[in-house]
Length: 383
Image (cartoon, rainbow, N blue to C red; front, top):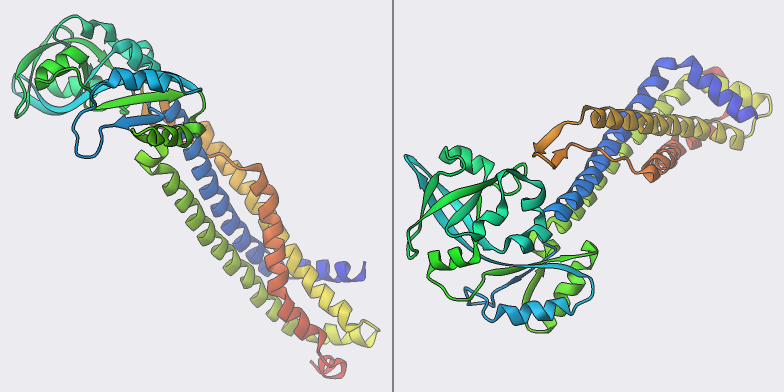
């Protein structure tokens, strides 16, 4: 094909400019691939965290209330909903723990160990010393390892729990767990101990629910709300989904803008090429080349630059992602669960971005190609 042959000849004869144009597009695409793969990896990690630690639905007290009363009836209602796999009541409060000269504010949660394990498996997979079931035997407490280190306590030591309007009591440390920072400053006691501490009766502050499908959380929460309960899905409580979608959209727009800018840098290169090849264009026209032939030559050159840059950027982005994943950089770690920096490249991105850069580059080359096709052969031959 005549046009393709001439286009290749132009690009090869101007290796430096060709390399710069392809490199600019490739860098833009590489950055875009990396940002999008980082968000994909974060979403996958988030799903792992939700599966391991976060309740899918939380039922809270009604507005203006501090506690949920008659919660056993509520539990019976929840178990009638298809897809529910665990229900864990809890009585939560803030407390101040003291040991010798060390004082730390903690989140004190009264729980039923068997039910909590169905939500987060803390007593099954994350105990490093002692066991979670031991908190059922009197005034005992299980601490997060970082909290235990701050207080400088070990198994068998006693901590003094206190807080305004609460009963000061001594708790024996009977368990230490490590979730890699996901339960930092958490301390678990039995429901009875938490009620004694607060001086409350048979009440709870929240009810945590686990489902067999995390994506049904909004649906089930809406069903409970329709029945008159204050239920929130993990998406609504954290706002993470909206944040991720917003970041994904804004980052994609910014990265596409970078690609557009780099693609239109090709237009500048093509304009210079038209000026440099003016006499050659005149010769081709004098030999019978039509305006359409000339226009296609420069559009093909623009397209090759964009496609090559897009393909190179995708390959580079994929290789960098694979390398970063091979390093297994831990952002947080525990005995059974760790968060590793993960870059997950979407295969569709590897297909779409070369096509996007091809299209944008062709668009960017339309004006230079049109200018070249409109040259007067006689004027062009004079240079």
